Image (cartoon, rainbow, N blue to C red; front, side, top):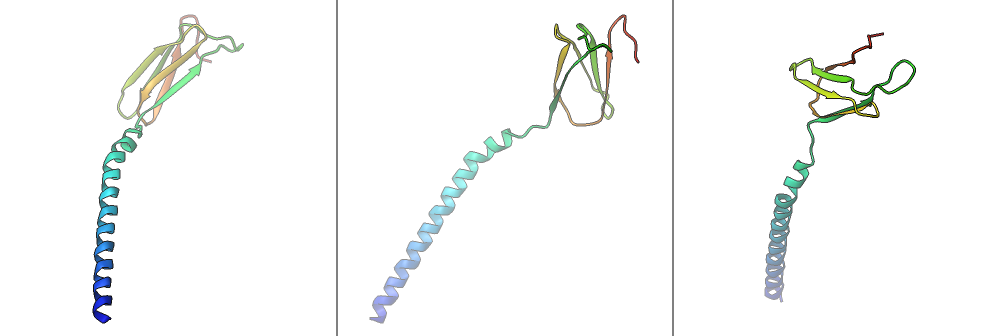
Length: 108
């Protein structure tokens, strides 16, 4: 009887080891498949958008919007559209100075 129990215990241990090894292999495959997708979801840039208006709240079409990174001196430029709106894409994190100019307008 003891011999039978020892054999049964050995079979259970082998089965548990095979099951554990299979779970580890499946886990590794899932990590390798899913990790690149998770990493691609990370963004290291943002965007800046807005609407340029005058003191009465009227939109300013054709205003020049300039965003200057104070650390790198990289300058991003855009001109406001027909609704006074603008969008600057792929802006790296950091401190910026924004300026808006339009002929005929002055700083308040």
